Image 1: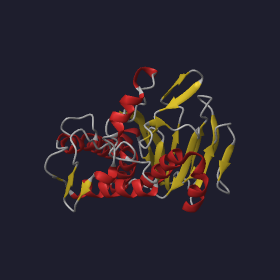
Image 2: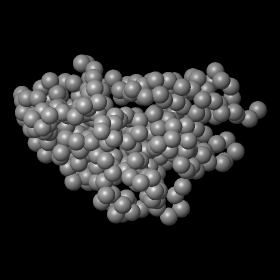
Image 3: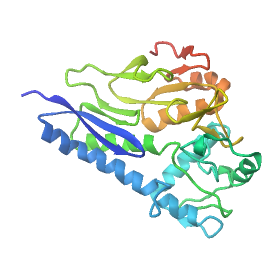
Amino acid sequence: MGEATFGIEFDAMASRCGVRLAASDAARARALAGHAIDEVRRIEAKYSRFRDDSVVAAINRGAGGAPVAVDVETRALLGYADALWRDSGGGLDAAPGGLPRGRGFPRGALPAPAVLDAARALIGWDRVELERATVRLPRAGMELDFGGFGKEYAADRAAEALRAAGVRHGFVDLGGDIRAIGPQPDGAPWSIGIAHPREPGRTIASIALADGAICTSGDYERFFELDGVRYCHVLDPRTGMPVRHWRSVTVVAPVAIAAGGYTTVAMLLEGAAVPHLEATGLAWLAVGPDGAIVSSPGAG
């Protein structure tokens, strides 16, 4: 008897998430999907800055004090945060201080310059003291936030959990950050639609994906408009203000944590992003400020 594909949805990391996989029946699919869901929730519990019992919360509470011991997994993520900071020229900063990470500015208002200045005084990955088994935030009020890559890391780990459980056909979708495990049972790739950044429910392109990952960053899911100007949730820690160039950037890479990193860096680089994307050698697609699509050869 052949396998059918089943979709299992769940909520995590403030996103609607899902697993699609091939299995003999719905009960088997749910049991297999549980491996991925458990891994996503483990990572959320361990690294969410909104949980008092998380590793990130413990590091942030220790700001200004002694170094905090970290395990191998956390040290690897801190190393990746360092690489992203360097690759983005300081734009993707996992120590964003008092900026309103992940949700944009509250109540749809721009903060006063003095408020921004106070927040920016606590920003700075270059200040983080990172050793082999410890990390220290030297100034009270500094904070780490893994929001720039945590969901993508979870997608990769969830996919590996499914693979270890024997899944060979399927993908994990964490709020649009997608990691494929293998093609459909008949060998055809999955068709992944890229959301239109201005017309909800529509797509601007589709990308065939049998393995690897596809991630998108954009200005269209969490934003507000003020005096005709759109302000999104992606903040540049160097200015404290939202980025304003790209409507969306999509990257295809072997793993989600890389694809997501490149999309966020491109958003932060704004008009200078195209050479950076071209240098990756990966497939990518971006929607510019006038709605025009720019992409790598063959993308879309």
